[in-house]
Length: 170
Image 1 (cartoon, one colour):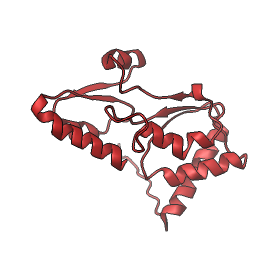
Image 2 (cartoon, rainbow, N blue to C red; image 1 turned 180 degrees about the vertical axis):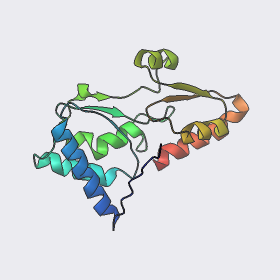
Image 3 (cartoon, helix red, strand yellow; image 1 turned 90 degrees about the horizontal axis):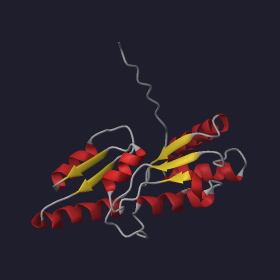
């Protein structure tokens, strides 16, 4: 069976963001109780700005939707500007009509990550080196997962540096 891939090219990043925001607004209008997993980082920021405008204009609403945070880093201070939860709030959630109880995120600081993941049927991966962390992050899994880094003391410095770099750059 052949797989068809539809490729769309845009003149600019802004054109792309406007198109994606319009599609998301239309989706929310058609499926108001949608469950949406949202990423963070610099790439979706212009899309989220468009969604904020759409909500303010009454074109879109998150009121009945459920939003799931797609990514998060453990070991990063809860208020760090690169923390995924902080980024999603800053760029979208603080500006739209999503009730706090409709926002869902996994807690990377949970005492028992394996139990938290089991309770939410979330894939749970344990990595023991910076190389395994990079491999886990590069593996397409199609959803939300928890990656716990467990390393020997002498490998900890390199892994901590990699996690900090991720938190600062996303």
